[in-house]
Length: 120
Image (cartoon, rainbow, N blue to C red; front, side, top):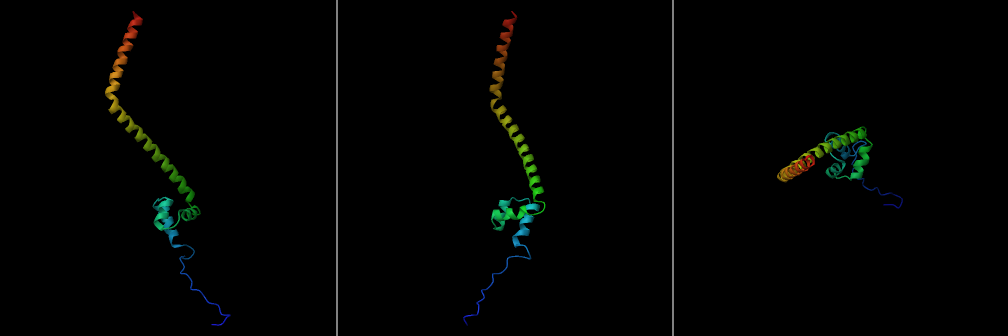
């Protein structure tokens, strides 16, 4: 070869489909239709979480989906808290019902004696 000829390097195969990379359509489907979290999508597709997040935040409907998910999570949290409180009350009443009954009876007897003494 001469000194003035350029050597062309082989090109890497393009990973883009049109204007999109192959993971992008899958990421949209997993986020909007399947309801997966960004971290899980990144793990599934083998792309960084930051890349997925940056891409999805630019998509139409992202903010609405984010607000919807937040409301859903708040509702789930309320339901969980209510069930936790009910379960806690059941455990406390089951464990302490005998003790509570004895204490209540003792307090009743004391109150009766005090009222009786005040009256007479």
